[in-house]
Length: 472
Ligand code: ADP
Figure (cartoon, rainbow, N blue to C red):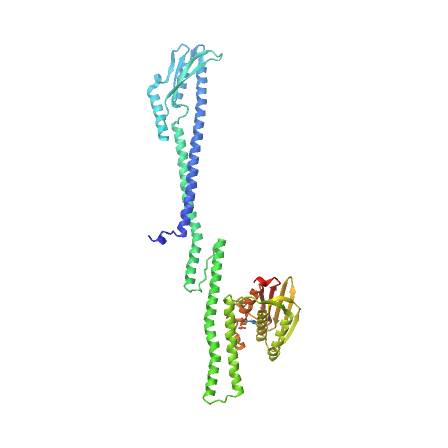
């Protein structure tokens, strides 16, 4: 059997669960009310019977005056008693029958008692109430024995027609309330489950689409459930990231092939010209070829670095480093490039001795500084600072260059991301410098932030905690 086919949809499952729970609750409440009501009612009837018999006895005793029974009134009392399911026989103190219900109207007595029997059997088919006769002695106001009365009935507890009607009415009401509750619950269950399952269905459709490579459709659904809203937002975020990554991946293929092809073609044509004897292998020509080879090597090295950081091979090689001096040396080495663009490099470097990976921290500062030089126009300035604050080392690289647009800021650390491709191509970058820089900072358990304004400049701030990095 196909297991999948047996799976229920979330919608059905929610509806079935909610309705089952409510059904269970409603049925249990209904049954409990019914049982409690019947018990309480039976209790009430029993007590009432007792009271009525007492009042019957008192009424009969009152009908004996001056050694005489008031037969007319006794007949009225006897008739009312038949109506209430009691067959009475009144005897005087000499055992003579004064008034008997059966003698008065045997048919009526039978009818009433059969009615009660039917009522009780209908209410409870297992009812086995037996007709029984109780004898009560009667006394006058002085306490003298004046006779007795036999009261025949179906025990202390039985239902008359009105009581059966009352109970049936209440039971009907309970059933109606239960049906209304169940109908309302089913409607609410459908609404709730739709509310929960619709967005989840949407999300699952979208994730299927994402799985098939469609990253452009966003889930446009406003749920009033916080968790589902968060889920939708996360999927949309994920989609944007995947879309961006997909774009970067496609661009990488074009970029890498383009970046490699251009210097290779140039080297090839130059070498062919030399080999064919068209060109003299002069120093200038050979150094131009050499420059292209250097460019290629740098490109391949950057790609190699990136691959290394990707493959988790990177480990920190910690030594005691004087950070101020390290940055100062990097400034000296880059001064030439800055001077070419008439850029002034200012610095304020504290003497900080710390346990760092010297090579990687150098690479980080070189990346940030060369970016600052690349993306700052002629005559600009760059300001480098390093200091210690709250158990952390801070490195600031600030420039008054072209700046980075707001919408690009969140992507600049992504691999192969370049704000302006044509500008970056001119500047020679391939969009991995900041990715590598971020990996280096992460390896040191630190963080890197950037603030920038187009046309005003950019500032990168690196924070590296002074912790025992030996275990990393
Ligand atoms: P690239 O090799 O292209 O410079 P990076 O990863 O180093 O790649 O930088 C990513 C992008 O961030 C760059 O293409 C550039 O647009 C932008 N960027 C980096 N540093 C700066 C800066 N100091 N000023 C302006 N833009 C910058």
